[in-house]
Image (cartoon, rainbow, N blue to C red; front, side):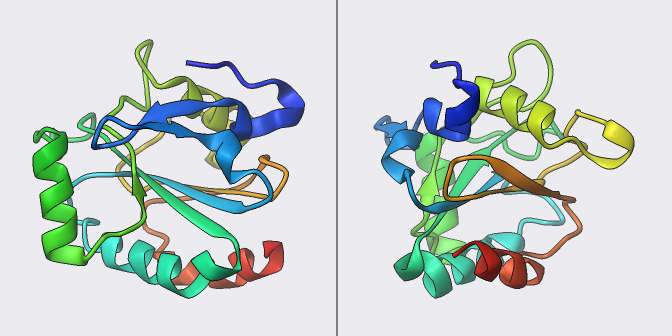
Length: 165
């Protein structure tokens, strides 16, 4: 994985997609990015519908939504890539970018999440991600500008997204 050059922000990172394809965040240069760690068996799983709604409402204006399945919280994402993809499509019509399953905390955390947590800490400066559906909003320059708690619905992000588009 690439380590971000500070002025590149998230644009210096790569990840694998659910289908194994390479996701280059540099391909999203000049776009607003919303990144969320996701899970299929969580009380917040219905937020997939809200993320999809944001994708549909704003992708034409420059928003990219990227979901990162994670199994670190209550083992709520036990499936493999193919099953995760089917679940998201079948239940929520997900057509936004979905990365392969990653860790977001600990030594094995994906480098992108290590960067996001340091650049945009949570309450009282905490860096650890507390649960599924923590969301990070990235400006057009690739820099994180806001971190949202799992309890924040995707619909509540509309004004912040609008301000960056």
